Length: 232
Image (cartoon, rainbow, N blue to C red):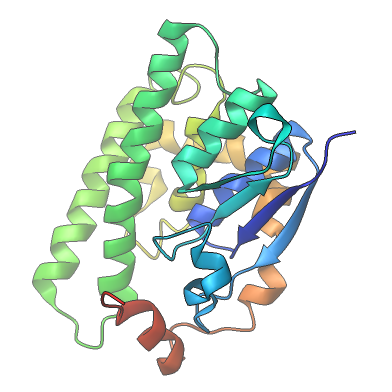
């Protein structure tokens, strides 16, 4: 019997990537909540496994050679889990290249740009038009890139994969990013298909009761923790 993966998690688009994979692959896991609004990400015991003080992170009790291993950064976790469980991460090189292209596209583009759009549109104490326009337009461009790709294939990597799991949580907040999915019919088709999957629904539901306890838009203490970080 496989020992449960220890998941260090908070319900955000990056956290959803891992719960979705674990649900899709049927891998047992335990959720360890890292309340990012209260500063749990700075606790020494968490920094030992995630030195960038960001969740998600995992500990696999049955890592390489049967010894425990920790992994931080959501893209690296998805690749590790995909290799280990041989699901949703193709083994042939040509197919793997396509999945990795779109995985890193999300990690380096969609996530950061959508996060900045979300921040300037919803959390910035001053409504700075340049910042709002800059990031809203860039997300719009990235949605257009996805829409074009998804007019050619059913899923980002061709078949359903970790690339789709990485992106769907970010598209889930499209309204807060100033976007309208009706402008992107292929993306909308993909989003509806992915979010209709039972495992995706289950992954997105993990920790929602915890998330609802914190209203980031009005919680100034949580905003200070999240948005005022400097080197420590």
